[in-house]
Length: 353
Length: 287
Figure 1 (cartoon, rainbow over the protein chains, first blue to last red):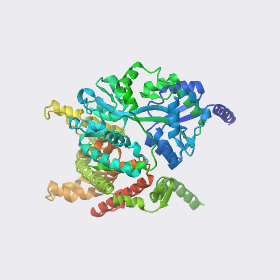
Figure 2 (figure 1 turned 90 degrees about the horizontal axis):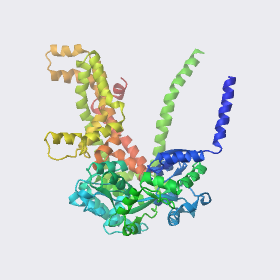
Figure 3 (figure 1 turned 60 degrees about the vertical axis):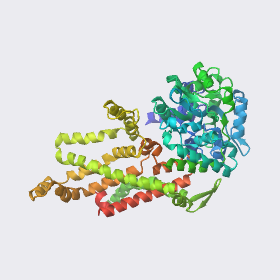
Figure 4 (figure 1 turned 135 degrees about the horizontal axis):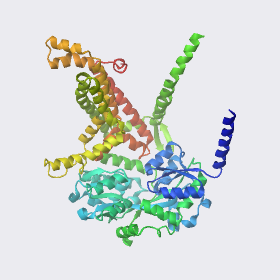
């Protein structure tokens, strides 16, 4: 009994001793954004521990909404989905810029993200990783596919895949000569665009092998040759390019769709110190390069591209010339309510025969 | 004193059941219902009403998916019964001793891995570059690769495979309890194989058939993974609609209403099934 008391006291002392400086960072992020080796370096340097949960935009918001912004200390949704989610559900807390080493961020991306993630005069997001959606094409078999609408061409019938999600609607809109982003503010005009895109995608359905859902699924379909052209992320195309030189990412003629994944603080996060430490840590040029090498996408860190492998740089340059970079359509913030309209359209496309 | 103690024991035994019922079933459903009757009118503004249910009835897409899910689940149930009954009869009546246990165990083995793994197994078999397509090309039955995945038949195969065990187990149990001498007596009285099946075996196995059907129907109706993964672009399943409402559309209100409609649908169909087969719930589930 006495022994029990003593050991309990020691245990409590030991526990309380460690909690003063070190925290557990519960990170809600995308696959590849928190490589094992980066976590190990961070834990060794700061004493914090990191628990990673990988997810996607919608699930991140849904998870945080379910807990009113609890359960995680740092999340990484895309910059266009932050202001509306904050407006609707109030799941984030503002970024304290005094605790962020702003000099590590590329200034233009920092200010663009700040502008897009401002709600009620406060900034909620910091840029981290950016990339694009466009076409991943097996150039040996489907070199003629250069734009989103080419996926509906008879020459690739049955060997095409894309996601049934909002980027597809927007990409096809641009390829059809429309301007979805300009119509964000005018819901009637946007509905008109959605109607036209719905018609095209419904007509295109027989061409599609399946609507893909996860990054690994589309990579498998392309690798096995069952799919020869798809709308997908640039990084998937470059990863496949390493295995099969014929497959690569093609920036579509209508413009690749550019996204920036951010750092946001969930409203009821408990480890802000660890969160800011993590942000400042991963934005260092050398760490940013490690993340780029695993995730395949470039970061908003100043000098972060210097340590990136030459192969990845070469693939990036092969996909994007200066004109293609200038033609990237960056996602503006999604107004609240737009997703419901898109959802109805996507449901109808899914149900069409 | 003694009766106090037994009362205490009664309440202690009752409490886990009550806790489970109240915290995991009744409370979440009350919450779900409360969400389903709140209509969104603006940002962070909600009104109470049945608008979400009206959306379901006004949009043909939703109730068509609903009907499709119900019909395909019923077909799955019938197919599973047709496949499961001979298997169960063979195990229960024609096998003895160790062979019987082994066969029963072999039905169980696939269920030691998760449903996800089993579904991926089917994807490997059925996909265009998969085992079946390659085998048929190898034997010269077909010339080029054929895609077996991403259609309704693939969904049916997956659903039957996932749920057949839940048909076999209750059937084996009820068929086991059928005295062999009754079948012999049937033959002695000049009955044919078919008339014995119809007059003796099936009436005796009815509770097992009905409880198996209820479980299989519920599992198919509420399945999410199999229809989505095997159905691909044609995978319209009601649970998938609920998922998209909750996760990708952030529309919990409509999703909750859909959830309640699914509950009502499954209850109605089970009730009708019991009425048609003239079985009672106590008779089928209580044995």
